[in-house]
Amino acid sequence: MRIIDVMLKCVNCGVESKQEVIRSFHVFGGTRHLDTRFDNGQVNLHMQVCPNCHYCNFDISEKSKSAKTVMESAEYKTLAKSKLDAQAKQYITVAMVNEQDKKSVEAGRLYLAASWVFEDNKDSKNADKYRQLAVKNLMKNLKKDENGHLTLQCIDLLRKNKEFGEAQKLLNNLKKDAGETFMHVYFSEPDVSLTELTEDKEVSSLLKIAKYEQQLVENKDFSDHLMSELVEEKMDFGKFYSLLLKYKEKPMSHSQSTIYAPTLYNLDKDWFNAVVEYLKTGKETELHWRDYTTKKIKEAYSVEKPDYIDAVVILESLRKAGYDSYTTFNPYIVE
Image (cartoon, rainbow, N blue to C red; front, side, top):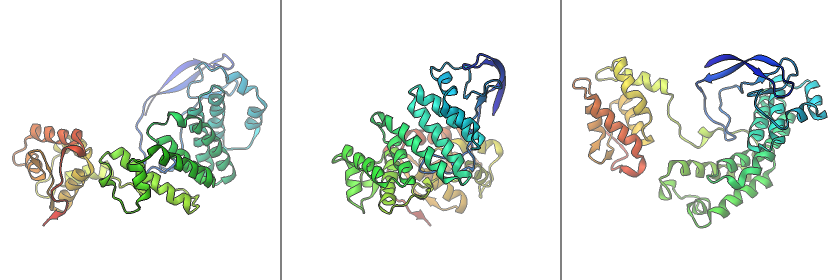
């Protein structure tokens, strides 16, 4: 993370103060929860706080029609005097400002962040309260939700708040909007395979989430669930890089691994799994794509005769082409 100090004038009181501004950062996240939180044990949104009036926001100098109104309101003053978690109070304050400024998506996400803080503190009452405020704001934008991401997030939040009826209504809307398309078939045919319906990876993932949410709602399950319960995830990049370095037959150098690791890691799932299987066991999964096979790719980055250009071109082509551009002739390990 790269942080610089700048002088900023508070939009609420007009006093200048030194504030930290994040110029760049890296995200180290774990598994995602169905409500979109990362499972890395922390909620940390960088906020600026005015030392004079205590107004807070991501940028305290950014113009806001409602900053003064919120800061002078009885609701804010009650919040400020409360014994709630200080971090959560900051998120709630900024959410209130965004809500008044008609920025409902931003407000919803900040109320949700506050609810996560309360979850961590085992304060279920306030976690439910601010999760409900999050849903209230996020649902104002469902008409603009073309891909279903926001709808699925709202379904999960409603389910966690035990509002199973409302969650079911949103699920019904998803099915209704899908009509006779693959989503309708997927919901109505319990044994249907995703691969029979779509090869679009994003759609496939959304379908899995929707069907899983349907099961949870029917079971009146209001507990937290991880995305990893239904979506197969890759191994950590660091572990894969280490595996590449230990390449059994002819160990790779750091420079060779640096060249190949990022591209290999971004391969489609079947190809990535084939590489991992080969590195771990020496067994080959024979996949074909145009004139390339896993054997040819392996030969291209052979340490004996390294042809880096050919290997990178092949791997980049595979990564960009996606599932539609190759056929799996034999998905099983060849002894």
